[in-house]
Amino acid sequence: MPGFILHVGATVLCSHAGLAQPTAPNPRVTVSGQPIVTIACPYTVAGCTFPALSSGAPPCATAQFMSSAVRVTAMGQPVLLIDSQASCVPTGTPLIIAATQPRAMAM
Image 1 (cartoon, one colour):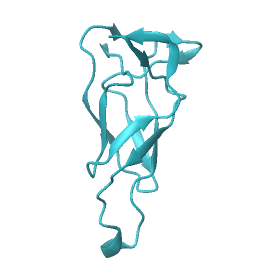
Image 2 (cartoon, rainbow, N blue to C red; image 1 turned 135 degrees about the vertical axis):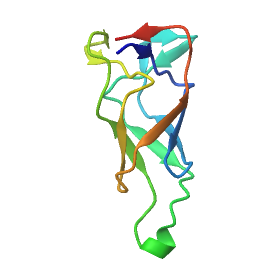
Image 3 (cartoon, rainbow, N blue to C red; image 1 turned 45 degrees about the vertical axis):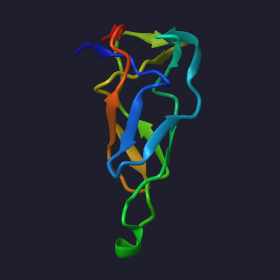
Image 4 (cartoon, rainbow, N blue to C red; image 1 turned 30 degrees about the vertical axis):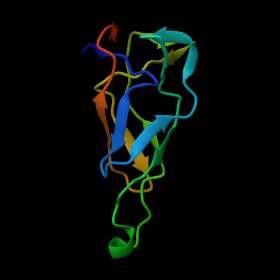
């Protein structure tokens, strides 16, 4: 299904409201003037509010996307879309893509 392409300026949060940022976006392809993100790019999570003290588990630290576009690639890697799925480490909870650019779509 087509969806908007994720870029560096997209608002991506962990399930506990921590801000997720891509560590290595693709600098050669831009949308809305910002680099896009491919499936190969890991995310770091800052400010996760997971209640670590009550459960004993650490908060979200990193995340990796598991689904992406199937027909559009950048430098050989599939691009991420607004409906792409990711999992946080070590909690296993998903990332939430709250907002991205509304111009370029991929499938």
